[in-house]
Image (tube, rainbow over the protein chains, first blue to last red):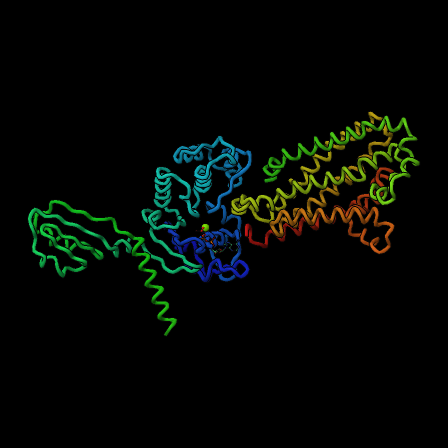
Length: 303
Length: 263
Ligand SMILES: Nc1ncnc2c1ncn2[C@@H]1O[C@H](COP(=O)(O)OP(=O)(O)OP(=O)(O)O)[C@@H](O)[C@H]1O
Ligand SMILES: [Mg+2]
């Protein structure tokens, strides 16, 4: 299976300003890839390079087995710009119709269905749309021709929580259909529930690519167990993966590295009346993951 | 794509067509009163104008004859410049304006070749200007007949073709600068500067030896030198304008194909 996106040493400088440095990345068909990074990290730069809006200073990228310089390849991509601009007196419906025609025809029913799901009003002149409502039009035009690859730059910006949920459902459907998604965001929490893998860029460099499931496995979880009677602390001490153990009477509090299996089996010898397990904070591990990486780099440099 | 661009231009072009037509009706409308009082507007009266100003207005000889009046009032200064302004504004809407507004980014990611995109927008510009020229030609001709200017239709057509070619030329300059740089202000400056200097060179500059040679790079030289109202279609001059326009359009296509959009 050939990769949908294949970047090698992709580098972009805006004059002397660095946009992206030496990006090497592969995205496989059917994958949802979350592309994360703080402001100015290089997410939009990467995405514009993928779509041939801007040209690389060095390196190259293949998209859908070809170059996105070719119009036919762009026809198989759906794109939501990070700084979506829609303006003019034209009504959203007419604009979508125009885009659909250029893309070789999109059934009106499909546009209507998307508009209904996202609760978008297509009869308003575009310059009168609010930010979130513009974003909905942007999403509709990206999804409406059912492209093989969706490239979405900060898709959830400006959307209310309900619409965000609907959008995530749409992304899941795309993945189920075997199509591929690349979406950028500032925070992991926004993409972790739909992404298979996430990559982090910072200051123009891709510093980590991680499988979300693996990340979850590595996650640190806080667990609290309450029993019907006090329990001996020794039974819980020294269990694999258990850290920061505190036993106070009938309550056990600790954090878990990885699988909670040993803890659960130890607890099963007593009567559990209450269990609290906080959702693992992937963001936190991610941050520790790449601050470790940086320390590692520093050491290498000083050596 | 052409149809879409035309739809985008529609409002402004209709506005320009109406404005230009109104201008012609007004100025051509007063011709009958001028014809009746030759002493007021005749050669002696015109001699009172300062020389440089007269040069700038294209000489102002023979204000009372039909062709002279039509030349001085319509084809000398006002209509070509208004038409150039119209062409420039329309041409800026092709690339530079949507690029600065950010709407071009989505368009270049559509499955249309970038070269094709610029060509289509050029074609839309040409068609739009043709429409404005056709409407104003009709108005000019009807008015000329009504007030008895006494210039035949083919001469008016020849002069009006010049206006169209001149406007299209400067529109294409705008398009080329916009396509190459994405900067509307720059395109406007280049066109404004070139048009003004070009005009000055072929009017006042004619008598100044040092800059007279500059007329070869002034589009107005090719526009006015053949005196289409008197002599009919100046084929060679017009072909120069059309050829230069084609070269500029090609430049626009190649330049846009090569660069980053929206940076
Ligand atoms: N047109 C441009 N001209 C000059 N520098 C630019 C341009 N666009 C981006 N940059 C620089 O390139 C770097 C990466 O910018 P980019 O827009 O890719 O960041 P981003 O990750 O998308 O940020 P954000 O989260 O704010 O959207 C930044 O340092 C930015 O200043
Ligand atoms: Mg961005």
